[in-house]
Length: 153
Image 1 (cartoon, helix red, strand yellow):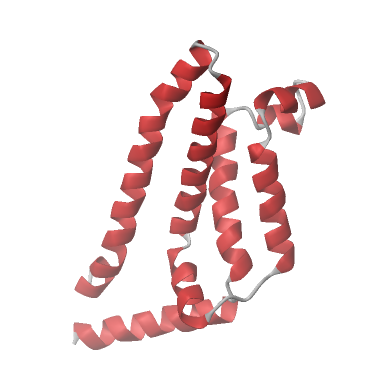
Image 2 (cartoon, one colour):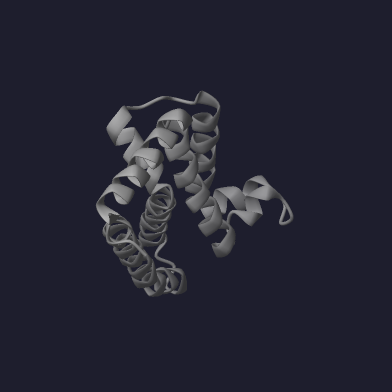
């Protein structure tokens, strides 16, 4: 692997590992807050977990984030609306989502930890894609590739 590619990917990889570590630190306090019925603490930890998952999703799209920083924001309203709806659904309190729907509905799926994690990461990905221009992303990728080839010689 080229040195420049490693220099570009290493900070992203380390940031991802830090996010995963922080998520693992949240697991035990969340379980304790459920055990001791500390509702406010649980919702606070759950919200922190959600935002870490969104950051992880944004990290997956780090090239698009770089393109947005270089070229500017280009809104894609449909993706933005979908990401906001997902964010609102994920922020719904557990009891509200259980009282609104039956146990086999979409709202009950939001209470499953794995589904929440997947949807949190998807929300982060959609948020980045909703503000990035696909053409600018390809320009950034090609420029980065050309830069790496230039330094590799």
